[in-house]
Amino acid sequence: MIGVILAAGMAKRLRPLTDTKPKCLLEVGGRTLLERTVRAMQQAGITEFVVVTGYRGEQIRGFLETSFSSIPSSTSSTSDTSTTSPHFTFLHNSDYEHNNNIYSLWMAGEVVRGREFLLMDSDILCDPAAVVAIAKQEESALALNRHECGEEEIKVIVDADQHITEINKTCNPKDAIGESVGIEKMTAEYSTALYRELDQMIVKEGLIDIFYERCFERLIPQGHTFKVVDTTHYFSYELDTPEDFQRAQELIPAELL
Image (cartoon, rainbow, N blue to C red; front, side, top):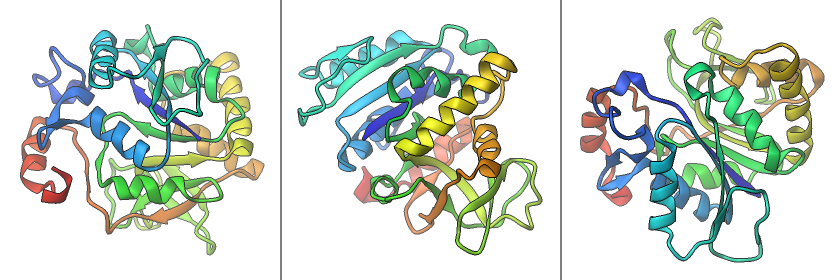
């Protein structure tokens, strides 16, 4: 399985913290969010990574190549997945100021189209056990935190079998069972359908400045969806403002330091 890390965004709401560095290189508990993401995926058995950069992309690549100095990296899809050390493929979203994460996910298709992969944004602060729990699922799966939702969260509505029927910010919070954490496992079958739909949305419809969850929703009537996995009992914290970052330093459990 391949790990896909989306790291193109500017995180404007976090300014001035992100004036000179990308959000994923900010530290919580003495470690960057990006290192935490890579380490969590490693615990899930992932050795091959696709990293889509944008804002301050050279810093992200430099950090990974320095932090994992014995690891080969490339800008192509060629990698040796038999090695136990991670291998990074870097793809650069040069128009990151004018598109959203759906475009970065589409770019990753150069490597993962039709292949099983685990998707994470680069700025997720969570217990690695939540990542492992999603990666080990046999079917396509999405991490969910159960709580009462408001207007801003990516909310999830499910059927009786805990499969997603709706995922967006605009659905009725009263109907939602919780919020997407931002960790998704795609089977090879789902990946094939996903990139077929992304081609339609990006190339033919020009829908480049929206969230990738819109593509997830469009796949549901086609018979492709996610099983939700409740990860509420694992620590996770959303980091959108400088105040969030300060609070995260206080809340992160000692075992995650």
